[in-house]
Length: 252
Length: 291
Image 1 (cartoon, chains in turn cyan, purple):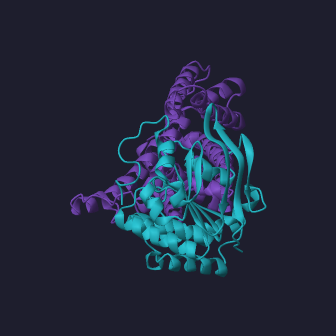
Image 2: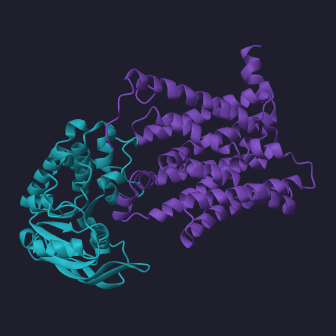
Image 3: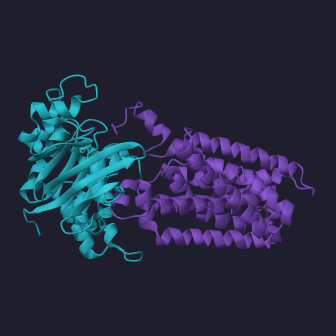
């Protein structure tokens, strides 16, 4: 299923919200089977880039292709993991209940989860090491475990391209290390990971490629080449006031 | 008073049977809708929506008399106008959606009260506001039944979309779900149920039949499905005992149903072993895990 040809292609992509330009004339290729960090300051267009791959963002101009298809037709391949703060942790739902949602898109109106669906749910929970937590309500988990529940849902869905919106936000040191470990493993298995990341040091430690945005594209390629001092200065210091060390010395 | 006098005798009256059935039908759909309302933090919006039905009902009454169909559509139009109007207001101006909703609903409610006080018949404003089980006509009962069965059917068919849209609308959308369709469908169902509940519960108290069972169930359940079922169970028990209370104590039916459901709610707040106040105090108000 995985080849190393370019699978995500952006060609002159521009996205506007009213008068505000969120992404401007982005042209780049994101290779399959590698992990890529989408980097930039607040409002640089990281989330917009992820959303436009999911096909929810009407493009003002340009085109996005996932492999040979329009994003709408590539939906089964795309597994999205939302930001942690978007989740209501008090919701009456168990770990298993969340992971089962990964199978919902492939069920019709009437069909329930089949034995095969249950197996995929179990396998996803095993893989992420949360099988023994299956019947816990989701508030009763640590931050790292909570993150793994949502990763398991994405795995159960069966896609091969994982889109993660700020997966490190709100995780403590231990949770972050755990996530770095998981994402590195996924890359070894040939899964494609595309994650919006705030923290440049974490991005360097965890991802092999980077896309640096400041509404328009500053740089993309192997992470070390993207995160040069000159590039980072261009992305973070243009027009915006940045306090402290943006090169990533302030965080784990 | 014997048990027979207490429970069976009231239902020898035709109007009591109709009132009971209508309240129980609405308990089923209200118990379901309430869960989604509170989990989506739309409880207060539902309250505002219910008040805003009044002018629609009053105008329908002025134009078409007491026809159930006319009252139903009057209320429906007023409710949808409020919902759509506040959505538009918040998009076109700097006014946020909650403020837009709040402003529109008091405006509508005020207009409704003004209209009703000018109605040419001897309509009792209190009946509109707080419900009167004596007024449940056969067509009101039919309406309650239709709305209730329709709501239950929607919940069975779209259970997964409803769960996803309530729990994680972003993921729902990412997997091809039609979030805004589910949202509009849900608002419409809420208005339909509020209008159908008006005769028994009254405009002001109708929401009690939706919210109180759901909040009570929320304090006991760790699964969405069990919360839905418990909520419906509480709504059924509360509406039946409320109708009886209203008969024996001569109270407005909406008020007595809300009082019975309120007792369950307060009991749950105190006693729930996992999420109740007593447990929390016993834990020494230990801070909850971070979110």
